[in-house]
Image (tube, rainbow, N blue to C red; front, side, top):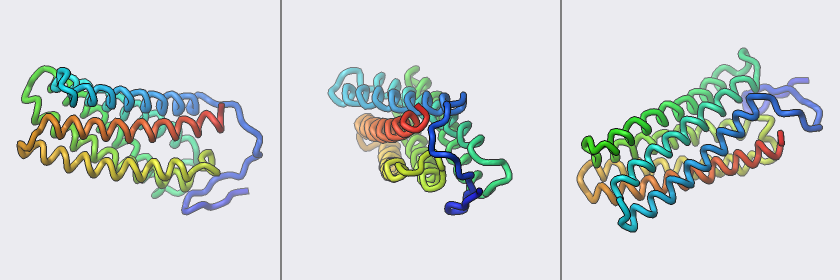
Length: 220
């Protein structure tokens, strides 16, 4: 029997747990990698704010966040693309897959910008741009994850936690964009970008942890 939940059809299945397939394992690994990358960025940003190699650690934190977004977005987009039939709710599929794909692309951009900043190629400007890119990615990913939490059958029953985490990511993303813009205007750019990396890292850590715990709980 097929049910419709907020525009996305899904098949009603037995409540007994299923053995995880490869895409589930990838989604779990991507979510864990996201959380680890977020945690690493938080630690690096705090050390930078304490005055320990702030420019270098800022750039490394940007790279860590880029890797986290790339792995998490790519793995979850792959999982979602196989969750429902290709002909089902094309608009919803496009919204969610597009947001997760944008997250992965932003991750690649953050990695490149972080490496260039690490090489001291107009580092402060590039870190400001990185903060804007990461913030925009969180806003887009937050919207996609909110839709996914309302719709995905493998999040059903605990979608509220994922939904709340996605809202938190969107708010932090807006803040990171503002901090990046202020940094580009020359107002304490190093401190503002470190705060942006710290905030984005915390948001990714929370989001990755919530989603990973749900995936392990359902398919573990």
